[in-house]
Length: 174
Length: 382
Image (cartoon, rainbow over all chains, first blue to last red; front, top):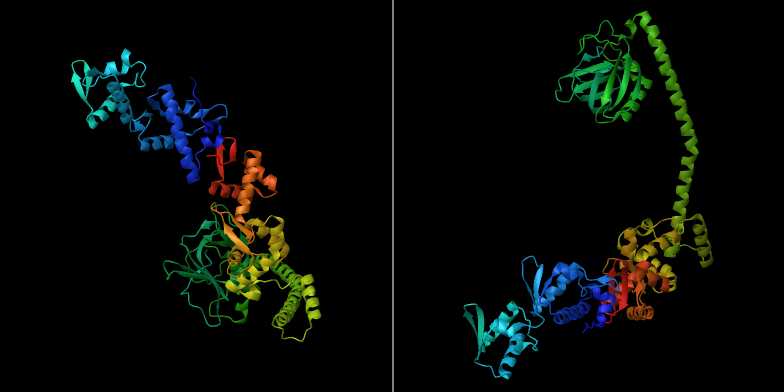
């Protein structure tokens, strides 16, 4: 399924950081949703800033426009404020993209668990993310760090408990 | 340098000081004298020199000892100098700083300038030879020079005299030539005074001059080029001047503003107004200050400063919304526009058209596309 670009993607001004405050807000909102939906589509969980510059998201070769590094940083900052992005290093060169927040993942996982009547069972993390049973689920293939965070969110809600086992981590749902 | 004698530096009776100059070093011929920098003084009778640091050290030489002198221009690293050729040492010369010297000339090196005026005064004194009229107690050794020396001296003195005469001749010619001019200047001054007084009378309506004559007189003034413009002289500097000027600008600028769609950059106004004035040009500050008064004087013009700092004069009737709306229409029409394209479209200057586009962007009607291709404006579809 090919990615559907939003209309702004082909609008040259989209690639210039707008000085008008109101216009900028709308522009940044559009960028945030574009980045998130693109990452969701490509199942990208981390982004490298330098690589991102050349990625089709920020570089539209057709209209010969690309977002400057400063502008990319502004977009990322916006995402961070919204809770969808986390920097992996102080230099802000790599980041985690959470096109779904941990709480949202947690909710999905718990839904699946309760739908299949598996509450009170214990799962290993591997089973959840890579097991055959979860193949059709959205959270299938979820990267470990994200999975862990989602489960931690559930844990905070009292719906799960993370257990440390001999060969890794597991989780019990309540 | 052996012609100099020690002196106490005091002037004698009948001797007056003509000019003095500090920062002068003496040269014995081409060599620097073993003295420091000092003050050289020219009196009606003598040439004196005093050490700047040690006022006790003072030497002099009678002017009658001077045969001839000339200027030596300054060079790189070298000060300007005056070279003075002297008679041989008289027999009964009093003691001085030098017992003997192989040179017959000295130099005055003007480290702090002043050589031009000094040279002039020296020339004057050497021409007038005032010391001959009022002899002082210093011995004047001219009578004791040996005959051979005198003949030599006469030769140089003769040259000197010829130069002097030539100089006087030139001077006379120049003064004569400019005599007429100075007379003309005087007459012109009177004329300007007369016209000024009449102009004032017209203003105050105190003269017995009729309307017709007033108009005719004004046209004469105009043809002479003294159109009684609002100048600093007539109205002084300060607010009065600016107020009057603002009123004048209000009149002049109406038509051009309307032609240009109600707005002109201040630089355009400046050029236009000064070209019209011809003489008595306005300075930029005066123009700006006058424009600032438009609003308080309730004139139909406004000085406006954009965010970028560009200043324009616009008609009060000029509507901002209309401009912005029309800008949006134009851009939407063409899809997108650069400032240059917009300027071409409207027949405005690029500067003003850019301001207009920026304004439209500010209110959110347009957005910008900044790339290597340049700055373009699009309708704001966000």
